[in-house]
Length: 448
Image (cartoon, rainbow, N blue to C red):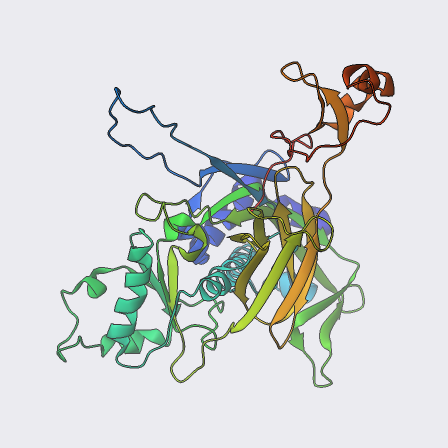
């Protein structure tokens, strides 16, 4: 009978690396997205251009040269763990009726590929901290095409959306059931699509069980705009005494399949890895003067006969005290960015779900985060932000006392005595209308 030590000896570094390489090939995302350098910590911030510099002619004799803005938007990749459990009978191993090395490599790689594709593409079972998947985000920004005519026309419309966002479609992805549709596809004149642009775009038909045909017929987009980073490659552990529940398999009573390793003379091999992903979605020159949230490098074609999901509208009002609106705040709803208007409001189309993570940044205020639930109807929520601490200080340019925003660490530099001597001799100088500080004392970085 093979023992625990012998099993551990099977999993050499080269063998475990082979599992990771197979997982990379099994997962469409890992094979086609852009892999960044490995993460050295739990999070990694991406500095993505959110606004491109604009060039222009100027007449030096009659006008000042304008300052070109080049702002960097920090998006953070958060690493989460993917775990795969492979239960195996000790009797089968002893009888050498299975090739344990090949079984573990193939099954583990397939399972990892499936769970990564499900989460990144459809947002299924995404862990806390992950952004919304490609399909939910495409629906939220309106990048959804309903097939009213031929599939050829629907794909053309989806490609047009991606191109109007100034991205180059480099792949069409769907389930295995889509292969027949392409074999029989004709263009607008009824001719086979051979030689057309749609025919030339690479196509992938997922066969790892990750595709959900009820949500999308296919996705068109620039898959290099999906970025992922690995925090930890494969690690292996062997268990001989544990009770394991498999929520993906249900018994006749509707309960998860359960394995008692010791009682059933089984072992379980666990493989884990950690990674994270993000879509930077930079703003192009073509879209620089427009609202960036309406542009996305992907578009989907909805299933035939289905109604486009995500028809609910979530409206958020950003305030400083529950009533006073804050304009110009950056609001992220599940990774989708909006900027609050003069009433402090933003609206976003979302899918009905338990809750969405909401993060808000505004100059002069602490970052605000909360979960907002939306189920079956449009919803409005008021968000109240906390202002940075303020104090009375002295301006060298103006002897009058004025109010400024400063870091907590510098509050002790201002005293009541300073205020009285620096003001107009009054014990309680009147507070003029405050100007918000231009610095960020909390040294916070934005996350998308």
